[in-house]
Image (cartoon, rainbow, N blue to C red; front, side):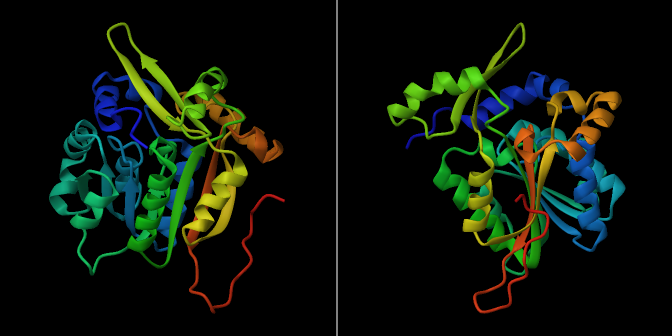
Length: 277
């Protein structure tokens, strides 16, 4: 299946237009706290896959002692990150990598491995198509040390892009898109950026992670309110935290999973806590 759009080029436009910074000026504080906790527990060598211009990498470098490899397909985003965190590039705490998972593999030596990998702001859903998403997860798993963990967020199809989902159906029937795929746009007065997304239901998300050799530790809401709002508004963040304590997981705006490299066959399996019933 051929790509439906040039995702790397479109993300270069997205960052250059400042649309990305306007929508997401900072990380989701709730998600960031989960990543910080994992690092504080000793998972200090971190892969930020789909790092953008450093929405998570930059605060993690300031708030923790993590060593971070930050990878993104957008050359513009990697350029911004490298300039933004130049002092950490110089000290070696931050290693920017421009490219996809295959480029990442070539950039790492055989002796290197990660304790933690993060794919935030729905990065997994921006990878076209399902085989490539599975390959990406498998590649990241191969780069994790034994007991290494992954934190992934994806958009909930039941809460997002209803018009675009309906419009995508004829492309699905023609075989140009897969079920759950959509095309959408981000606009300013001067530019229109065409985007691709795969929207998940909860069962699909869990299955996709498990199929690539991960054992789920926790699945929870990334947020209940739209993330572009809670990253900009303290009152909305407070309200969102309250909603997450009372709303069923199916109402999440996005899902967040924490998983670890599954034990080899024959080792004792420990039941996964924190999963939905």
